[in-house]
Amino acid sequence: MPEALNPCAPGWAAQQVVHWQAGHGRHDLPWQGTRDPYRVWLSEIMLQQTQVAAVKQYFARFVERFPDVQALASASQDEVFALWAGLGYYSRARNLHACAQQVVALHGGRFPASAALLQTLPGIGRSTASAIAAFCFAERVAILDGNVKRVLTRLLGFAGDLAEPRNERALWAQATELLPQDHLADRMPRYTQGVMDLGATVCTARNPSCLICPLRERCVARSAGQPERYPVKTRKLKRSSASWWLLWAEDAQGRIWLTRRPQTGVWAGLHCLPVFESSETLLQALPAPQRSSATLLTAFTHVLTHKDLLLHPVHVLLGAGQAVDAEGFWAGAADLDRLGLPAPVRKLLSPTSGLATAP
Image 1 (tube, rainbow, N blue to C red):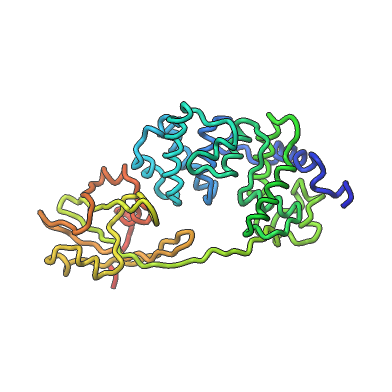
Image 2: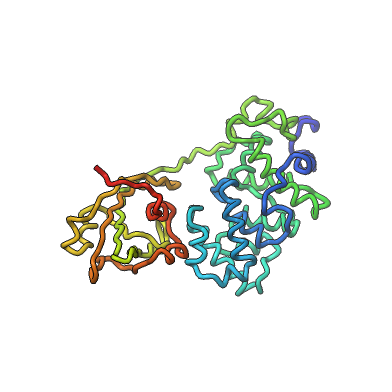
């Protein structure tokens, strides 16, 4: 390939991205303009599998309640879950809390200054570690999240199947070669933000805006007229489905019976209405006199990453001295505000949920 068309020519891609980001990249995100590892780390974890628009409000609430890593580390898991509720992928919240505690206990409240050490902390993988190290410490390390994979595979015409680890390793190596080589204190943070911005706003999955892309002159995929062919990844996630029956038991004071989900699986560690595999097993958990008065509400589907949950809420009022045959506790309205509940359960329990009795 002639040097004038080579996207891997030393320094070329980095120069284009850095210049473009300064004039056309995103500059209004609430976690930008800082080299505070705590805020960068928090934003990177929240942005995993989640749109920027959704993350903004959660980020603001988190930094207001937990302004630094020490405040987060000293909080209870329930406090963290309560603020996280609705953001999804709750393992991130558990790892977030555990990571904060390790930073305080093992590193004196200061995040390690290298990607290699950052990866030793809970919930921080290679790309997240590199983002923190590049933004906060100007370390020359590459990130490779979904947006960046799309930008680089198109630029390079990288046709290796990323479902295969060897191809992913090869892309990491090429991503590292494209990094800025000098003036790292300024260029590493801006380049890292720039490739993320390109993937989010220009080099989109469908209908990419190639005409305004700073890499268009040497982009292999654009030259071939096939940008949407990249990245290549053949392994598809297999979706499954399940039906869950949720017992919404109330007492005369309006309290609700809650249980804590197991530490693994769907909604791990969150407080929840008791879950049953069938209406029959749910009814068996009720006092015999109340079984006939249990009301089946309209079922609804909650979509997870790999699974569709068909949820069947069943509401029942219990009298004084009656209990549910399921481990748990009574929670009042004030308790619900401070507990971590799955988003569909919190919505169900809301006075404005509007769920009607099933026919």
